Every structure is written in C-alpha cells, then in structure tokens.
Amino acid sequence: MNENQFLLDEAFRWKMRFLRKASMAERMSKGVQEKINARIPGKVHKAVTESVKKMVEATLLGSNLTTHQKETGSLSLGEKDKLAKKVIAQYQKAAAASGIGTGAGGIFLGMADFPILLGIKMKCLFELASIYGCNTKRKEERIFLLYIFQLAFSSEAHRKEIFRIIENWETENREIDWRAFQQEYRDYLDLVKLFQLVPGFGAIVGGTANYKLLGHLGETARHVFHLRLIKEEAWE
Image (cartoon, rainbow, N blue to C red; front, side, top):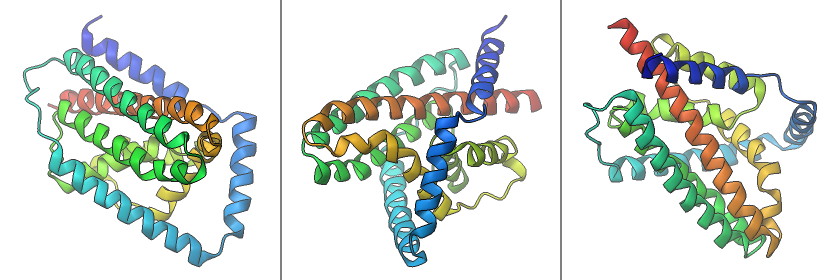
C-alpha cells in the first residue's frame, strides 16, 4: 500500500467515525440546547450572530496577514502530514496554556478565553492550509477553512450537511450561514467548557478542554485536506 492510499484509507475510516449517529447523551444534550435557543429572543440571536461574525472576520484577517505561505510543493502528502501533526501539537500547547491561564480566574476570565481560543484555532487552520498548498489570499479558500471549522464543531445533523458541501466544494454555494455558525459552535462548547468557569478548578478543565478541542480541529482539518488533495490528484 502506497503512502497516499494509506492516508486515504485513514481518512475514510475517520469519516465513518465522524459521521456516526450521535449517542443518546449527545442527542439529549442537543435537544436541551435547542429548547433553550428557542426561548432566546430573535434580537439576542441577531446580536450574538453579528458579534461572532465580526470576531471571526477580524481573526481571519489577522491570521491571513501573519501566516506566510510555506514552500511545501516538493513534499509528499505523507511529509506534509508529518509537518501538519507538528503544527497541531504546537497549537495544542498554546491552547492549553490559554485555558489554564483564563480558567484559573473563574467566570470572567473563562469568558475571555472564547476569543483567545478562537484566534488560536483560526491561526492553526491557516498554518495547516499553507502546509497543504492552499492559497489563503483567495476568499474561497478562507471560506473553505470556515467550513472545516464548522465541520469540527457542529451537531450530527449539521455536520453531515457541512460534509456534503465540502465534498462537493466546486459546485456548492459557499456563503456562510452566520447564525448557524455561531449557534452550532456555541452549543458544542457549552458542555465542554462549562466547568472552566469555576475558579481554580477551571484551570485544570480549561487547559485539558482547550488541548482536546484544538486536537479535534487539527484532526478534522488533516483528513479534509487529505481527501481534497487526493481527489484533485485523481482528476489530473
């Protein structure tokens, strides 16, 4: 089995796990969150959506300006994968440090971790995109990264729709549904990050949660890029 075939098989196995049916606990949690969201006034949803949109757009701009395109054209997919894993590990450490620092301060600093962690995640995605040869100066490539982000941090139903769009990227509508973006991301984080708001204890939980969240995003991005690049090679 050659290197590309191994990574393709690995990506397909990941896809099967990733798109599996949600557990009973996950479905119950999502049901509760949907009921809570339904009670929140539309004006509040609109305000939060606009706030998250501006936050993400600012993060995208900053990441784009500070990420230098890597010269990886001569590397094999396996070599790119090894480099990607190193980058993910570096960002996991940064995310964990952020979670420990803000988690120790309780609810107010715990809330401050939201934009910090968002920035770390986006910067990581830009670095990975550079490794795999994507030109993030192009708007459609930056939108592609947002779809990877959504894929990683969405519920079962939304995840399947996002995956469908990614797999048919060349023919799909690429606009971002910002309300769905912020709501799915917020709901995904709610249970994971809840205990970070407890002073002291939050430092332990925050560091661990951030480390795992960044690892989850990195794994998702790696496999999506592998599927995309191997598909593009097959067309050539």
